[in-house]
Image (cartoon, rainbow, N blue to C red; front, side, top):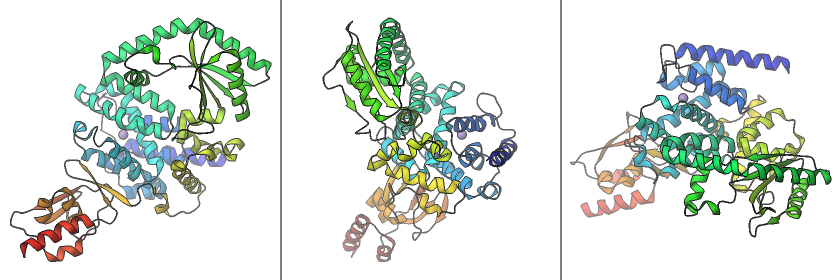
Length: 479
Ligand code: MN
């Protein structure tokens, strides 16, 4: 085990050296040497407990796009898995650059982008690296000009924070959302931050009293626990207020206490103890243990009214659930690698809803990869959108097509007029031909000429019924 650790740090050191050399002479907007950024991403990934390949890919994540280093170099140096991850991150960023203006693709296509990130993500670790990358960029956003700040902040709120939420990375979601919101609406941010502070201050004393009362009662029941206040993020308050006509009195979870216990039985026992002390509010008991949220989040929530008429929310969960709620998918990578937590293995996470089963499938594959077992890289691809590909127009609009689609399918999808006058196609900036199957993330530019007319032979270069229909109509008309 010690030997393994040693090897690990050797590889990481090597990656740091290579990245430092590759980025030499490049600087960030902050004025610091560029390497500061990949190293920060490394640190974030290590904090999240990610596996070594992911950490190395994090160190190298900007090299292929921005330096002379090639994917082949990385493959030779660090193996297929690291190269695969770096490639994924590079592809995502190319795809993102295709979308020039955030205002034109939001909000109409933001779901598309989110889906795209996941589809392109292939290996979920690509997304995790991307999230770490974005987190550091947000933390250093002040160095950028205001228009760029707003753009990145807005995108973080609309795409990256929801992605973190989808992966149940609660802590990340909160940090990202608040960092970004500060730039999107600085006034509102300050206003709400003050409001929260004021509220917390006024609630402090009675909260302490409640904490003591609950602690005493739990001790009496011989339940092992930790209790702490949970701070509501500015952005989530902002969103909630919008839902409740800005009426702060309707926000019941402004003050919340979190209780962490050993097992599920203790969760329900604790809920009982709290309800015996205070009056639960009607319809505010939520059992996310029996029925986890879509992202796998588990907890018991209850809102109660205390003796001095304070409304307090309690969140009760086990340590594993807490870890998972805070660190989400990253936490499960950690556990999978450590293989220490019996509970975890037996499966709190077994309760993953079916729509998240792909995550586990992916984890299992990733774990095999780490154990050095050979796997088919194709298996790492998510089936989530297996039958679909997302490609771009040069302007950055996303077009989804069935897998296997050809340039003419794309052209007819854009517009019949475009389809009818196709003379050629550029894929990712390079001239290509009409028989070339489009691939996930391709940027497709259709070349047209007014003099071109549809050809009978095109029928063999089309797979979608939509395009076939259009072409047939036109061929018929031209006869
Ligand atoms: Mn980066």
